[in-house]
Image (cartoon, rainbow, N blue to C red):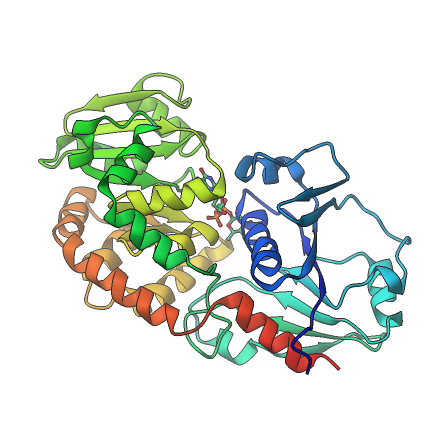
Length: 383
Ligand SMILES: Cc1cn([C@H]2C[C@H](O)[C@@H](COP(=O)(O)OP(=O)(O)O[C@H]3O[C@@H](C)[C@H](O)[C@@H](O)[C@H]3O)O2)c(=O)[nH]c1=O
């Protein structure tokens, strides 16, 4: 096992939907390079989605270098690969089909690369049994291993860059920095005292019902919604096109449409808000590192399979926080219930949820960071 392994790495990312696929792959790529000095090539099939979370991306470039990472537009290239093109470590994201010619070249390379299938995050128990499992290629002398992120030491842990928790804590202790950051989006001085909420969810979330409850409530709420999120419901509330800069106040609620921002700024948004509504996978993880209360809108699956995944997480996370369980199930259409009562209970429990968020963060820190864990595993497999 060599500590210098790997020197080179390729990540294959197919954007299935939205921004989570490229969001996670980009974090991985940057961290492998910046913290471990690895030469990373990121193959991605959708540069337009990438650009949305990272404005430096040139959507017309077949090949570009961004922050030291080689980014290649993955557009059906095949048949052009030889063993010399293959890096020490190959990561396929969520089981994407790597080009067959690339796999042939992997099999011809000496030594063979370590091949990892990076899987989705879930708190379900079966994950622990599948983490690190090998899968033989049916024809070639190649073994692929499954690598699962997760919430305990039997999994790969969570993605976390070096210094992330410290940067977040420093920012959260600096009221002026937070006010200046939110001020960029038009949040006024007097709004800083309101309950600041960021809202990122899928279009089917019961946003209008929650807006009604907030508008009629006693507590002032300032809700920041990145452009494009829950567009129709946001437009219904503000009575205008939901473009960045649009805002409206009704009763106790102000809704502000803010730009869809670069990934690093989105992190800051989560750090600056009192409660975060997040979705999918990457923003869900970032909300956990923000150490503030959050509500997760899970990516929907057929036959409501996602409800199982949602409950598995809530069982681990929402310890002693029934209001969060109830609210989350309602938010995800896994139960019925009056939004007003559900929100009132959740609101009353926010101080306890803040403590729980910090406790959870400490628990997650103990699992190490995913990139280091993945590298340890890859080294143990290298010959
Ligand atoms: C709101 C916002 C998000 N982002 C980033 C944060 C994340 O990296 C990314 C959003 O990704 P997610 O939170 O995962 O939600 P998502 O719904 O966008 O992404 C996904 O969910 C996965 C579970 C599925 O596999 C994917 O197919 C995909 O649907 O966008 C910004 O950079 N700026 C913003 O303003």
